[in-house]
Every structure is written in structure tokens, then in C-alpha cells.
Image 1 (tube, rainbow, N blue to C red):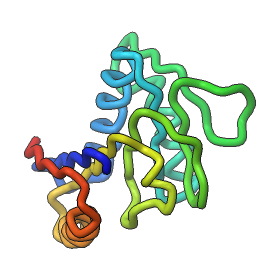
Image 2: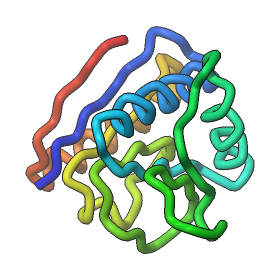
Image 3: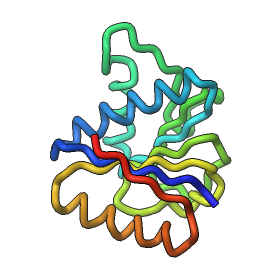
Length: 139
């Protein structure tokens, strides 16, 4: 079973959610982890691709969009049914990815927007019912 951490932001905007994804990714990468960030669609994947270069001065996180060349410690993708296991899955989707069972750790990033909170509660219930270890972090 996976360790699933829900990071609940005080902010309601998606930009804050993406910045948190960048910060978590950078921290996990610096600790030697391989990370996959799962986004809703191609636009979000490309937005995150750009943010990983610019979210703070001097930021450098080696990453790639899925399907683009050589392997990298951080991958960004969307809409996939399968994904090779990595150390951490950062989920920016409203649904739990079908391949989540191959990851030992999952980070669910949630804004305080009511719609986002409701969808995250559904994911929390599914994870709980499957027997995963859950923790909530209010940020």
C-alpha cells in the first residue's frame, strides 16, 4: 500500500497548486527520488514543464514531458493508462490515475476552492477504502 499525502493549500488558485508541485518536485529530486507529475491535459503538462525552469531564481529540476526523448529523473504526463514505477507520484488530476498502484508515495495537491476540495474528498475515500496510509498537510 502507498503512503498518500494530501497537501491542502489556503489559496484557491491553480497557479499556487502548480508552484507547490514544483517545490515538492525539487525537494524530492534533491533527495534522490524519481518523480512523475500527472496533469489533467497537455496544456497543464506544458505549463508545468515551463514552471519547473522558472518557479524560482536559480531553479533547476531535470525533467521531460512524457514521450520526449531520453529518461529524466522527473517526468510530466497526462491521460496515460500505464506508467513505470517511480518513487513519487504528484497528482494534479481530479481522478486517481489507473497506474497509481505502482507508486510507493503519492502527493495529492488540493486548492481551497470548493470544487477541488469535494473532488479530493472522493479520492481520499477511495484511497482509504483501498487501505493506503493517509496524511493531510494544511499549507
